[in-house]
Length: 75
Length: 361
Image 1 (cartoon, chains in turn purple, red):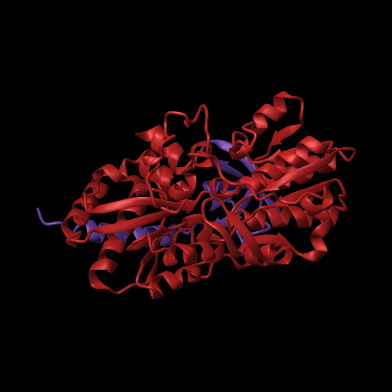
Image 2 (tube, rainbow over the protein chains, first blue to last red):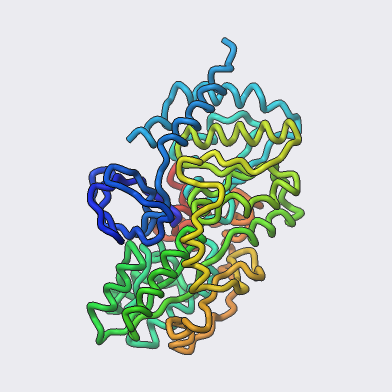
């Protein structure tokens, strides 16, 4: 029920966008997004609404942290 | 898509598992609750339980909205559909949940009732606008992730002047149930994998009481690296005794949450008492419609009271939701209760712990 699906914005107007979710295109409302989004941005979609803009920079930071932890392994 | 696939790297997963083995040194072990049903499914899907050391155990919590909807609330849906000429609009997860009589919405539909599955509350409003001569009831089930979307639908219906659309206000909120779990003397949890998409809306502050009471709290995504690194983070907090709320899903969740979504939710809903299946009544854990939106409350519109109903004999969904037992300890599990013939909602919902245990074990 709290499932969110990441989708890429491929078309947009002021209040809605068409997102590509794994090859499926779906219109979503942008009314809940606190920030501006552009074509090419990724958003998390839940029950027809974009609820969050996904942040590639934060993804990179999280992965870096995980890699640092993983690299601490002594073989 | 790199935002997802990079978090499925098997080599890094293997290294994290090794790290978890190295650092899970406490003799008393580590009990971690995954609160969210979507986490439960991911944990099974990626086989995470099977790769953890014996002293690190994961238990499922009350984080499936369909599962925690009380039997009375389910029965009220049946009352409205049976006694009124209405079309019911619902998310698909509810279709197989049995009422006290044993029948479900699929049975009602086969008897000729108009019951339609919706992917979005806005689709429900559009449906009502397209068919002004029919009366529509939307089942508003969800946590903070879904509540703003349902609130948006109510606002949209009001703006459009629709008088043939109403909702069953069944949304519930996380902080109160987390408080309940903290106070449960039967539960000895060291840390929580906090729900990723609830946190998108709420932000991280709702979990501060967990850290203040000496529990690790890590907001977690749904990929293997997300979950494994969060488990390691919990183990480290337990080992150090230094507890905090850690946002391990910052590519999607901002620390302050989505204030716009919260504002929409607060415009339409106000806290009210709610009955959770297996847990009973928790004050301020529900979201009731504010007075100015009472015309959109199906319960008032059709003069229905949610009945107090005892749960099905033998069904241990309540204990599963509280983390007291694993699903396979329920006497009905897989025998009388399975996905083809579900007795309790934890077997019905795709995110229910019983359904996940059955499917993946």
